[in-house]
Length: 384
Image 1 (cartoon, rainbow, N blue to C red):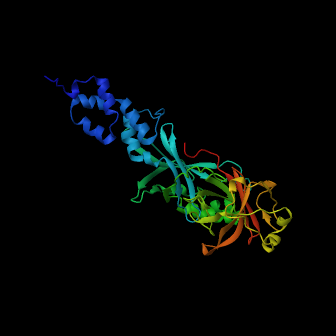
Image 2: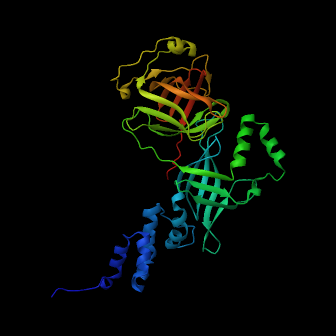
């Protein structure tokens, strides 16, 4: 006669291994089936695996809680906040990096370095934290903006997958010495900086965030996609994301942070990789000369990966936003850059050149504006 047995007859370690393949919802249902399954399903090693597989949460050091409690009370509700986000702050925007920290989830605003130091690291400021309450029974959210200690805030998921952060104690965003003191502390630096400060301060208590996707590496590529810091004249340094289209023929620079002319989320420039160009030093003497000469396009079948290095100089009649630019470049292409009036009025694309120096630096020559901008790669690992 065939042997008959119940699954409950299996050794506990075998049952534990079987249950480790279940989702958190299935584990919850298993707990309702019988006491034995409940005891096995509540083992922390099972929930440690769920934390790792569902949220890439690998270390509960500093949380003072089991993996099961971290999963049930924190990750199940807020684990999906971890990642990279673009925050809506009027036309300026913001780059927000949310990650696990010891005992909390922390959201940090990653700001461009102060002009003209485009190659410097991003400046980081804490926006909000998510952590256990003192009794470990619930979680609380703190806003770190403003002029006082951290205070209460909240996070809300929207139907479109975006995330809304809201400060619930907005009085903490008022300068203790009054609004006039706030304005005076910024006004002496820059009128554009004052404008940005006032707008982001007014909207900084309530803003929506949209998730940013990582651009996959391309092989081959004249330069890999990613985030870059670029010089934008009086607006300072802004952050853009360099992307390729599906065919790898078009490169776009999308603004992550912006300004009153060309706001965040808009295209800053677009490059047609089928239009490489080669110029001699003599042909680059002035922007006026570049505009006058006939720049021949290379044959359509030109392998841009095998283009020889060429000379590069900033034209004499051009505003150089970066001192000591490299004297040679890897490649140069016809491109177009977006310009607009205040409030993104009358936007249009104007001709320019996209100049790739190396894997971590490129430039854009705005011919109409007679301006040269340099972009330096964000080297921090924002996906860890």
